[in-house]
Amino acid sequence: MEYNNLVSELEACAQACNVCFAACLNEEEVSLMARCIELTRECAEVCQISASMVARDSENADRFLRLCAEISMACDEECSKHQLEYCQNCAKICRHCAVLCIESAAVLSR
Image (cartoon, rainbow, N blue to C red; front, side, top):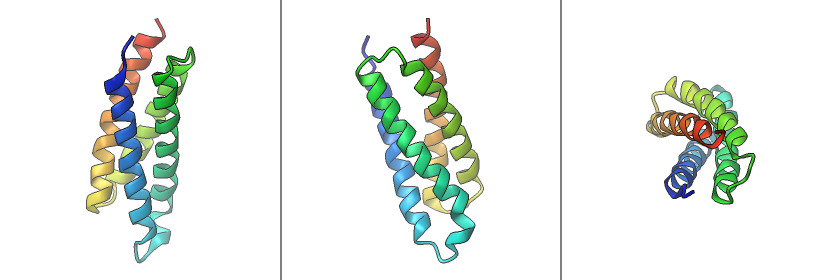
């Protein structure tokens, strides 16, 4: 089964999270961004791993996608709290990624 779009979306989410992560580290009051930094880093990592699992049609891809959805939702929730453009962009992409992961995990687990 072809999942090129899903892999691309996971990679796009990882990219948005990495941009947000790096930008948050440069904020004047970086301590206020600690949870955002933590979640964007974790989300980027789980998105990359999930993309790899999907690309190679791993039998465990659905498990990784469910975890990716959970972390993407948490990242969306945290980034949404910050009015910074890169946080808002990250939140939007994470929200979209979470939905795709949930839908795809359901298909893959059948």
